[in-house]
Image (cartoon, rainbow, N blue to C red):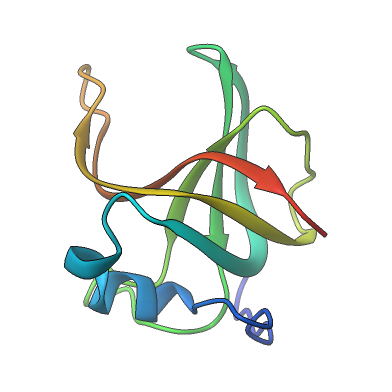
Length: 108
């Protein structure tokens, strides 16, 4: 989807801020707004999406946040989600995430 630039949600964090503060945010509810750049429905009973908001960089690996939800979104849409931040989650088969927002709800 090329360059993405999304304004931070009120009371929320940017994707890069979540990565930068991941140790203190672990296990807490986090709000983030971003563009859905990848959408994989119904895997392990959840929908998986990747959000980008224009913060962070691909070189540092802090520009893309994986989110799991039961809500349905579309690739290319801008959404605000709230979920619990998990660290170093390994779902086997090569699916490991150093940072992931789990059981998120789309709030806007």
